[in-house]
Structures are given as structure tokens and as C-alpha cells.
Length: 71
Length: 468
Image 1 (tube, chains in turn green, yellow):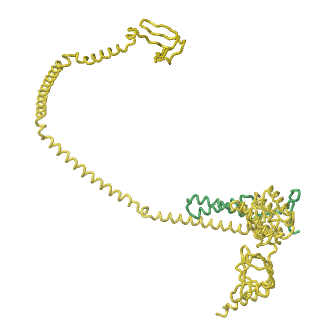
Image 2 (image 1 turned 90 degrees about the vertical axis):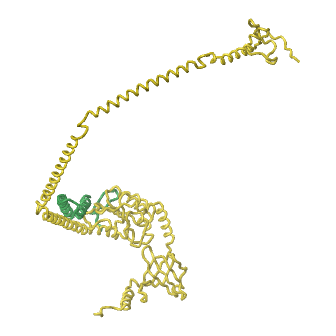
């Protein structure tokens, strides 16, 4: 889940704001609409296929090991 | 209908019972600062206890008040023990204080306040320096003890809210003498991991337990840390220096986790909400354009187009007419003009034009010759006059005056001429080309040049004799 998710959300919000204030021409708004829908699909997918990230713990010599707080 | 409405005393009494029945409130220990303190004549003490963000009323009856070993005043920090209940008359809850002693921890507080003021003055708490916490982090660093509630709360909260983000724990001593160095060391280690946010904190404890987070080196380490930091030390009411220095303060470790990562549910809702707004916006746009088109289509002009050029036609014919009338009028006027001209006197007898001209030329010629002759005569007379003017008849007059003046000068020069004098036997004595006038100018053995009529004599002075 790269950083881009946050940028995608921002872009999505930008397009919606533009469409809502209605200044955009018809052709442009159709174009923006399709782009926005693509973004929505992408964001959804990213959130849906969550693969659980394992927690790590840094040992004395700086290496990473798996860590489970319960034990 | 109105039996479900309670009286005020009923509800207050119910609340009071609630307070009195709760055994947590039977014996409560509070730490706070006294404010608006009033000692009543009856010996009872009325005041309130406060900390940074909340306050509670307090009352101490005469019997317990008499056992105090210090005189409480506004601002004094105290530890109290008592029970909390509701005072029905006012409906306020308050603490009935049985025991109160001065808060022994003064010196630690003093140290805390001192360091806090110092670092504040140095600008370490400046809002402008605080980095924003990223909304959607990929990797969260955690600096706390590897065992205990804090780390468990943080990790489980992150797992619950945002499992797709990775957490890296830096096991750190959070209590005791060398905790502060361990915290600073781990902040340093955390910086060479690609972290988006760093949670630094620990669970609750006494002021001594939390003290490492009040240490200056920890404060400076957090300040300089390049990763955005969230500090979560102790419980809500505990404030440590690292809370002020960090980019964000969380009241508890769990809250820190909630501030560090977004909630998956919120995110998915946000996305679906955005798509709804998107659909609404585009539909609205299309509907608007369609209506707009309809309006245009039904506009008057499109329906009856000939209307447009009809009135155009009319205007053109109007203009046409106007043009014709103008032209004919113009023509008539010109014709008339022509006729008048023809009958004009001059055209019928042209010679009178040059007749007048001829006469005027003749008269002009006569006048010119007259003028010429007069002029001539005047010139002649002038010449005559000049010829016999006095100067021309005796020119010597001009230079006579100059002449006499000149001869006068010559005579005078004659007189002054040294050669004449020499001629009569005088001589001029020179010493090195200077004329000698007095004895003082010369000394014995000087050589003199004496100018006589026909040349120079060189002489040496033997003696000087002064006239008496």
C-alpha cells in the first residue's frame, strides 16, 4: 500500500470539488468523472485486499524480528 | 401523562444516592492545586481543587480542618483524601476532604516547571516547529517498554484500526536512572528506519516513574527527531516535557495509536461517500445541460426564424427610400446653381475684368518713376552737404590735438633720458646690474660698473666716506 493512496484520495476530493461547483465544461466533467470513478475503484481495491502486516521488533544489533505483543 | 416527569429534588436525591453507593467515590485520593480558598467563621474550609484542564469543589469541616499541619492558600499544591458526593441544595458534586497534606513532590514539580519554562523560552515548544502527523502512514515506530500494557494497547489499536500499516518496536527502558539515555539512543536508532510517525511513551505511574520523559536530553532528542513524533506518557492528567516538545501529544498510548493511524472503516466510508457525491455531481451537471438545451431549443428565434430577417427586410427598404429622395434633391439644387452661374454679369462681359487690371497697372508705373526721382534728388543733396563739411575742408584738425600731445611726451622723455644726463658729466654706478644709491649698498673691495657717456668703467672700492 504505497504512499500514493493518500495522493489518490486528495485527487479524488479535488475532482469532486470542481464538479460540484459546476464551472467545468460538459466534456471536461465527463472526462473527470470517468477518471474519478477509476480512482474510487483503485482506492477500494487497495483497502479491500488488506494483507496483514506483521509487527517487527528491533533487536540489540539492529536486526528486525517478528514481534507479538501478547506473549 | 405527567407522572413520568420527576421533581428536581427527586432527581438530585437519585444522583446523590448514585454517588454515595459507588464505593470508588467513598475514599478518593486527589492531587491538585487549591483555588478560591475561603475559611468560614464556623471553621469550615471552602475551596476548589484544580489541574490544567478541570476543577472540583471541596469542603473540609472544622474537625478535620483543625488537624491540618499547614495553612492552605490559593495555589498551594496538595494531596487530599475524602469522599465525593452531591450537595443537594446546589446540585453540585464535591469532595468532602478528611485529610489534606502538602504535596511533598514540590521539588520535582519545581524542577519540572523550571525546565519547562527554560525550554519554552528557547522555543522548543514552538508550534511553527511542529511537524504534521501524516494522515495515512505506512510504517509506525514505537519507543516504549517491550512488555506491559502500553505497547500492547498501541499495537492492538493499530491492528484494529489500520492493519495494513507496519509497526516497528524499539524496546526501551521507560523507568529508572538510565531510562533517559536508552530513550535517546532508541530515538537515534529509529531515525535510520524509514518511519512515517514515531510514538514515544509509556503507561501510567508516579511522577518519579514518568521522570525520564521530563529529562532535558530526552526533550532535545525528540525536538531534533526528523520523524513526526507523538508523545503518550502516563494517563490523561499527566503532562511531561516530552508531551510539549513532541509534534503531537496524546493523552494515553491507545489515543496515540488512534492519532497515528486512520481507521479503515472511516477510510472506506470516506471513499464510498466520495463516489456518491461524484455520481450526484455528474448527474446534476447532465440534467442542467439538458434543461439548458431545451430552453435554447424553444427559444423564440429558432421557432420563427423568418422573424429575424423580416424586420431586416423592412429596415433595408426604408433606407432605400431615404437614399432616393436625397439624390433627387441634390440633383435639383446643382442644376439651379448652374443656371444662375450662366447668367452672371462677369461671364457675359469678361473684358471688364482685365480693363480694371490695365488701369491699375498704369497708375502703379507712374508712381514708381516719381518715387525714383525724388529719391535720387535727396541722395545728391546729402552728398553736397558731406563734401563741404568742416572736417573734409581742414583734415589736419583731426590729428592736431594728437600731434601736440605727442610732442609734449617727447619733450618729457628727453628730460628723463639718462644718456642726456651722462652727456653733461654724470655717471650711473651699478653693482651687479643694480643701481647704487647709498653707501650701505656696497662694501670695500666690491667691483663697480660705472656707465659714462661713451662706455663703462670697472672700479674697486678702496674706502667709504659718509657725508655728515
